[in-house]
Length: 244
Length: 244
DNA sequence: TCTAGTGACGAACACTGTTCGTGTCAAGTA
DNA sequence: TACTTGACACGAACAGTGTTCGTCACTAGA
Image 1 (tube, each protein chain N blue to C red):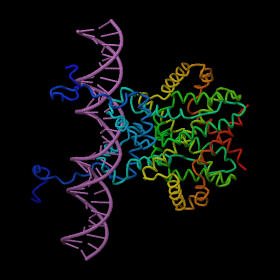
Image 2: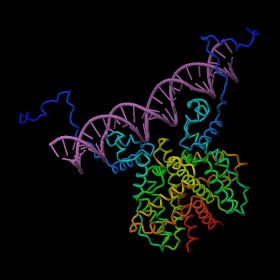
Image 3: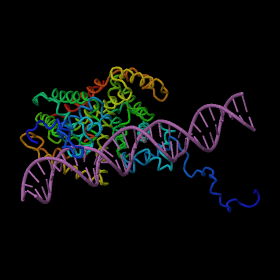
């Protein structure tokens, strides 16, 4: 048959099982699965991210993913660490540890908040991926080189980082609620949220909740970003008191 | 037939549907469902808590629960608030706001950590139940009466509380992992965890992670409680700097 | 050539939260 | 008294989830 023309002109006989179709989808890999998962999370939020959803996006079935990731938790951990990889920090300068620690906080927060509700993926475990360790080395090293004893520096950066991810996590909750309410504009959501909270606060019995009811405006005055930075600065102030 | 003896001596014919059985289970109520849910969470962790599990414990089917709670998220919110109800605080004394704020933090943490991984139930939403509001009034009021302007007091107690629940949340993660590993002794789990982390840290390339690899002992020296209190004290120190 | 390991993946499993439809009961109204 | 309405209870079913098991195809090494 060789040389008698392209075999595409002759239909294959029905009893012949065709060779496996030429691959029209990418070769699976862990990296590809993580990237796809992150893209889905960015577009649809964490609740939109399922093994089936990822597989669908890759033109395969969910079972195929398990050759590359142990389970969904592991996938979430990797996605989280992938996001941490976007954090870009200036070279450490211990003489300016206050400013640089603040930058670390703002940058980490910015990156986490830029990925839908990814902070909820920290659910999956205690971050120990390559980027998490890179960030730890940065903050830990900065404090040590600024003069803090290692043991205290360990506590300090740990708590600092916990605060950041805790706040990002809370932001995630709001994000998920915004999505559940079919709203897409964060400002819109924020106003609605504030309205509901303040109505609620005003409805409380003044006898039992004198401070809350008297200062509703103060309670709802600041948005998430202001709250985050306030807490950052509290921690930094506390650290400065302990710095040798 | 009346008067011819107890009808218990005569078996009912098989075509007759017996009257609804006398209730051998408690009357359902929201309170009962919440209490049952909490008992299950205490015994089996949050992952053990499903609508079916609660229903099973109450001798009914999961659909019955929906007459009393809107959905699982609502149940989790109520369970969380129920737990917050166990927090017992001394009467506010603004002159001792530092000590009392610390007590607030320790007490809240103690209660949360005493209920398996309940902190993960904060997942379900921003706490607005009666006990959450009671605690907010306490901390907010304390700071205001100590001299802090309401707007700043709002930020302060909010951040303080976020830090506490963030840490409790992290504790929840460890709890869930401990359960997944079939371990029941927290000390055992902690030692194992520390061992694995320190092995990991020691395996990092010293060139890229000089501080981490050189100070492994410092990094693993403190347990969760010490870390929590360290962060508490940082925040309190920061607040003291801002108190008029 | 044969074997073992790896990757791909369909079918199936166990489980979850929730809805729908139906029955029972109690309270209120005509 | 009879009828209507609302609340509660709950079985069956639905839609969805993460994961495992078994099978096939392919590749590399003995």
